[in-house]
Image (cartoon, rainbow, N blue to C red; front, top):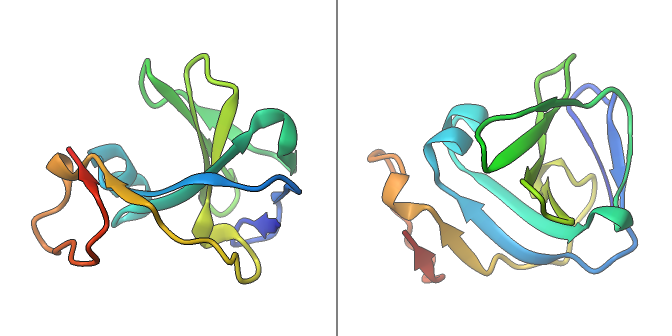
Length: 122
């Protein structure tokens, strides 16, 4: 699986099978993406990142990897975690993956409904 930011300055690849496909509706993801953020996880050791990622410590719980040129929000990693999430929207080809759940739904915007039948976690 190969992905990149909008300007192409950052690329990422993994041969691992991603897991934990989810859509995050938290306020930070909404502010970073303008809507919500869909992602999948792999072990950090299984993800190769090339390019000038800027890591933003968005809270005590997590950091976010952003392209300093185009502003794309590509990565999320919980503090002390050995897994890293990458943006499904940044993958360059069909993923063959299916979303599993919605998270932080208590913080979702009031301007849309979640109607796909997937589990929702507040």
